Length: 76
Image (cartoon, rainbow, N blue to C red; front, side, top):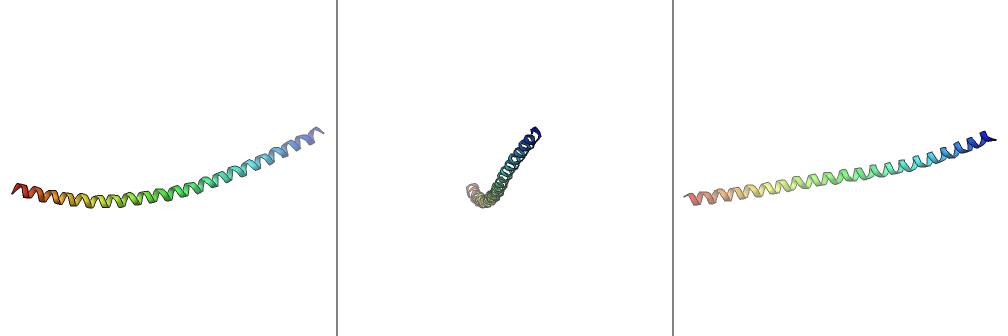
């Protein structure tokens, strides 16, 4: 009779392991979805930074042009 109980215990442990494995897989799938979303957000942020850098560069060039004109006027 003891051997049957061991098999029953082994079966219960196996069921528990399968259940836990399914939970871990679901959690992993959720993490993969969150990672994909985070990667999209990162790409959007990079795009925004490049746009901002371009806009700032135009302003810097305009300021430099005005500064050159002012310096030229002052020196004449």
